[in-house]
Length: 236
Ligand SMILES: N[C@@H](CCC(=O)N[C@@H](CS)C(=O)NCC(=O)O)C(=O)O
Image 1: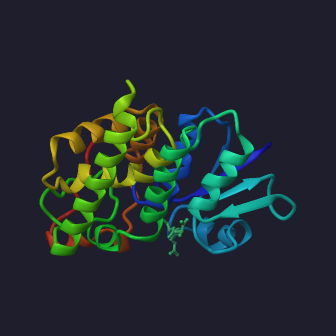
Image 2: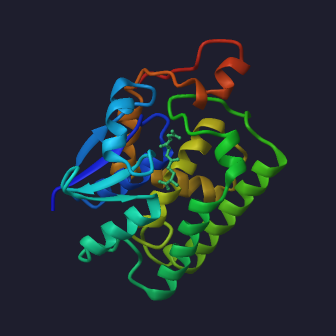
């Protein structure tokens, strides 16, 4: 296989982060194709790489003859199918069912959280973005994580949702990034899980590379202008 993953800015692109982290955590080799938002490359190359004009897209081979997989959950399935030797999904059927539901719920929902707390890894906006709908989304995330940890992951020595790092942890990694930026009030078990995700090598590598980026994407920066000052950019 010759895998290429087409992604956008690591600081902002939450959907890009998920399959990148999943592949990296499992040590699956791939070439990264970075198309930064609002760049000439994005305008010129995205139509070649992405049938939906969104990222991420996973290619086996390259356009026009390779096979493209778009939409995050389809990409997860393609990876799981291509690498059955890796437990991309939990091996236990009951855990796998819960993990699939959690991943599907994240893919389809949590709009309030995603809108009011856009991923912005380098920013520190503690206290911003909270609304009643966001609070409900966060409570639901905490419930899913707690269920997974109580019934599955917590019964192992691993800190992740279902035991070893899986597709579900990759799916929720951008939520951990949002919690890191907006610092909502969270339960102790949620915070412990967030620490484990941040320390996972693939996640840590993504964060490190995100912090090296300098582009400012206004669409993803509702609070930079609201604060009336320059964006808070932390040093790598
Ligand atoms: N449902 C898609 C969502 C992908 C998505 O919205 N990607 C964003 C970047 S994080 C994008 O490509 N935005 C570009 C645009 O909207 O023009 C998936 O699961 O992959």
